[in-house]
Image (cartoon, rainbow, N blue to C red; front, side, top):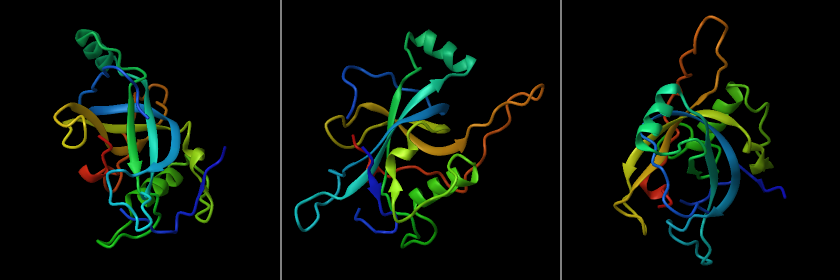
Length: 190
């Protein structure tokens, strides 16, 4: 099944069961394992009673550094395969405050990093994001909304390209993005 979205159209404003490991604030190598459109139940309904749509990306940790593995082992937690959900308003354009939307910045970075070749703004295939691996800046925080208010959680605040280490050179520093492609408290699904 393919979901196609027109990214030039402005729009207004599934989880795992059981306890989840909470990652400490750090950068993690993660892969998008699911990309889908879903109702934004934390926003005001449209006049017809439906909710605006958000693009929901499910990221999963693909590998850990030696230090991260050591900390996970000390905590007796398994961090590989930890999932974090990130949501975007799927609008590719300039926002009222000026500058690119977070989604435009995200996609433009993917193009500049060579992760995706080109964009079809009139018919963007949401599922085309599935399988992409990125370096994600993850923070640990306390949830302020929803049924899990007061509980610890994770959210992604920035993205960078995954670069292969050159022989004898070690791991290169991550690519800096102009601004974090994070979410606001209103956009959190928790």
